[in-house]
Amino acid sequence: MEKTLNRALPNRLGIKGWVWAGRYKIERYLYALHRVTGLGLLAYITLHLAANGFRLGGEASWTSAMDFLSNPGFKVGEYLVFAAFIFHALNGGRLTLQHLGITLGKPKPPVYPYSDALRRRRSLMWLVLFLSVGLALYILIEFVT
Image (cartoon, rainbow, N blue to C red; front, side, top):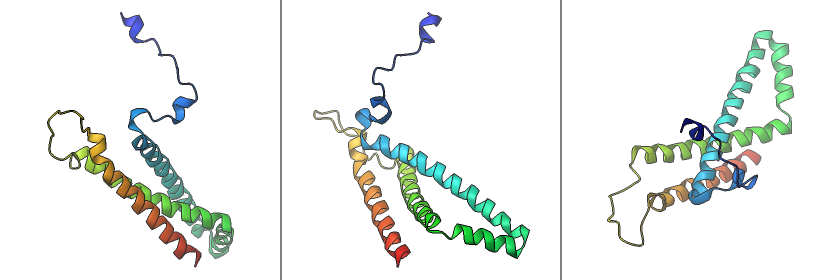
Protein backbone atom coordinates (compact mmCIF):
# COMPACT_ATOMS: atom_id res chain seq x y z
CA MET A 1 0.00 0.00 0.00
CA GLU A 2 2.77 2.45 0.93
CA LYS A 3 4.60 1.71 -2.29
CA THR A 4 1.72 2.95 -4.45
CA LEU A 5 1.34 6.20 -2.48
CA ASN A 6 4.96 7.24 -3.08
CA ARG A 7 4.86 6.55 -6.81
CA ALA A 8 5.07 9.68 -8.96
CA LEU A 9 2.30 10.32 -11.44
CA PRO A 10 3.36 10.53 -15.08
CA ASN A 11 3.40 13.93 -16.73
CA ARG A 12 0.79 13.41 -19.42
CA LEU A 13 0.58 17.05 -20.47
CA GLY A 14 4.28 17.60 -21.13
CA ILE A 15 5.26 21.22 -21.74
CA LYS A 16 1.61 22.13 -22.21
CA GLY A 17 1.17 21.50 -18.49
CA TRP A 18 3.45 24.44 -17.72
CA VAL A 19 1.10 26.95 -19.32
CA TRP A 20 -2.30 25.21 -19.22
CA ALA A 21 -4.47 26.62 -16.46
CA GLY A 22 -7.09 23.89 -16.50
CA ARG A 23 -10.49 24.71 -15.10
CA TYR A 24 -9.16 27.72 -13.16
CA LYS A 25 -8.44 29.64 -16.36
CA ILE A 26 -7.24 33.22 -15.83
CA GLU A 27 -7.13 32.98 -12.03
CA ARG A 28 -4.23 30.54 -12.30
CA TYR A 29 -2.28 33.00 -14.47
CA LEU A 30 -2.99 35.85 -12.07
CA TYR A 31 -1.70 33.72 -9.22
CA ALA A 32 1.49 32.93 -11.14
CA LEU A 33 1.91 36.60 -12.08
CA HIS A 34 1.40 37.55 -8.44
CA ARG A 35 4.30 35.29 -7.45
CA VAL A 36 6.54 36.57 -10.26
CA THR A 37 5.87 40.22 -9.37
CA GLY A 38 6.57 39.42 -5.73
CA LEU A 39 9.96 37.97 -6.65
CA GLY A 40 10.65 40.96 -8.90
CA LEU A 41 9.87 43.38 -6.07
CA LEU A 42 12.13 41.40 -3.76
CA ALA A 43 14.94 41.67 -6.34
CA TYR A 44 14.32 45.43 -6.60
CA ILE A 45 14.50 45.88 -2.83
CA THR A 46 17.80 44.00 -2.78
CA LEU A 47 19.20 46.15 -5.61
CA HIS A 48 17.91 49.31 -3.93
CA LEU A 49 19.61 48.47 -0.64
CA ALA A 50 22.84 47.61 -2.44
CA ALA A 51 22.75 50.89 -4.37
CA ASN A 52 22.17 52.85 -1.18
CA GLY A 53 25.18 51.12 0.30
CA PHE A 54 27.36 53.17 -2.06
CA ARG A 55 26.69 56.19 0.15
CA LEU A 56 29.06 54.70 2.67
CA GLY A 57 31.88 54.98 0.13
CA GLY A 58 31.62 58.75 -0.03
CA GLU A 59 30.35 61.28 -2.54
CA ALA A 60 32.49 60.04 -5.44
CA SER A 61 31.25 56.47 -5.00
CA TRP A 62 27.65 57.66 -4.75
CA THR A 63 27.78 59.84 -7.87
CA SER A 64 29.43 57.09 -9.95
CA ALA A 65 26.75 54.62 -8.83
CA MET A 66 23.97 57.10 -9.65
CA ASP A 67 25.52 57.81 -13.06
CA PHE A 68 25.52 54.09 -13.79
CA LEU A 69 21.91 53.66 -12.60
CA SER A 70 20.60 56.61 -14.62
CA ASN A 71 20.90 54.90 -18.02
CA PRO A 72 17.71 54.17 -20.03
CA GLY A 73 17.74 50.45 -19.25
CA PHE A 74 17.31 51.15 -15.56
CA LYS A 75 14.57 53.69 -16.34
CA VAL A 76 12.59 50.92 -18.06
CA GLY A 77 13.25 48.70 -15.06
CA GLU A 78 12.00 51.45 -12.76
CA TYR A 79 8.74 51.62 -14.70
CA LEU A 80 8.39 47.82 -14.52
CA VAL A 81 8.83 48.03 -10.75
CA PHE A 82 6.00 50.57 -10.58
CA ALA A 83 3.75 48.38 -12.74
CA ALA A 84 4.63 45.26 -10.74
CA PHE A 85 3.91 47.06 -7.49
CA ILE A 86 0.51 48.24 -8.72
CA PHE A 87 -0.53 44.76 -9.86
CA HIS A 88 0.91 43.03 -6.81
CA ALA A 89 -0.86 45.37 -4.39
CA LEU A 90 -4.25 45.22 -6.11
CA ASN A 91 -4.14 41.47 -6.69
CA GLY A 92 -2.96 40.92 -3.12
CA GLY A 93 -5.99 42.83 -1.87
CA ARG A 94 -8.23 40.69 -4.08
CA LEU A 95 -6.65 37.49 -2.80
CA THR A 96 -6.96 38.65 0.81
CA LEU A 97 -10.67 39.39 0.33
CA GLN A 98 -11.15 35.98 -1.25
CA HIS A 99 -9.32 34.12 1.50
CA LEU A 100 -11.35 35.91 4.15
CA GLY A 101 -14.52 34.85 2.31
CA ILE A 102 -15.78 38.39 1.83
CA THR A 103 -16.18 38.05 -1.94
CA LEU A 104 -18.14 34.79 -1.81
CA GLY A 105 -21.49 36.37 -1.06
CA LYS A 106 -24.49 34.49 0.26
CA PRO A 107 -24.70 30.75 -0.35
CA LYS A 108 -26.87 29.81 -3.32
CA PRO A 109 -29.02 26.71 -3.60
CA PRO A 110 -27.54 23.94 -5.75
CA VAL A 111 -29.87 24.43 -8.71
CA TYR A 112 -28.71 23.71 -12.25
CA PRO A 113 -26.93 25.59 -13.85
CA TYR A 114 -24.63 25.77 -10.87
CA SER A 115 -23.01 29.04 -9.90
CA ASP A 116 -19.58 28.19 -8.57
CA ALA A 117 -17.45 30.49 -6.45
CA LEU A 118 -15.00 31.17 -9.29
CA ARG A 119 -17.66 32.74 -11.49
CA ARG A 120 -18.99 34.88 -8.65
CA ARG A 121 -15.54 36.33 -7.95
CA ARG A 122 -14.64 36.99 -11.56
CA SER A 123 -15.96 40.55 -11.58
CA LEU A 124 -13.46 41.51 -8.88
CA MET A 125 -10.70 39.86 -10.90
CA TRP A 126 -11.58 41.93 -13.98
CA LEU A 127 -11.73 45.06 -11.86
CA VAL A 128 -8.22 44.38 -10.56
CA LEU A 129 -6.94 43.78 -14.11
CA PHE A 130 -8.50 46.95 -15.52
CA LEU A 131 -7.29 49.06 -12.58
CA SER A 132 -3.79 47.61 -12.89
CA VAL A 133 -3.59 48.29 -16.61
CA GLY A 134 -5.14 51.75 -16.25
CA LEU A 135 -2.80 52.80 -13.46
CA ALA A 136 0.21 51.34 -15.26
CA LEU A 137 -0.68 53.33 -18.40
CA TYR A 138 -1.15 56.49 -16.33
CA ILE A 139 2.25 55.97 -14.69
CA LEU A 140 3.77 55.35 -18.13
CA ILE A 141 2.39 58.63 -19.46
CA GLU A 142 3.66 60.49 -16.38
CA PHE A 143 7.00 58.68 -16.60
CA VAL A 144 7.59 59.59 -20.25
CA THR A 145 6.62 63.26 -19.92
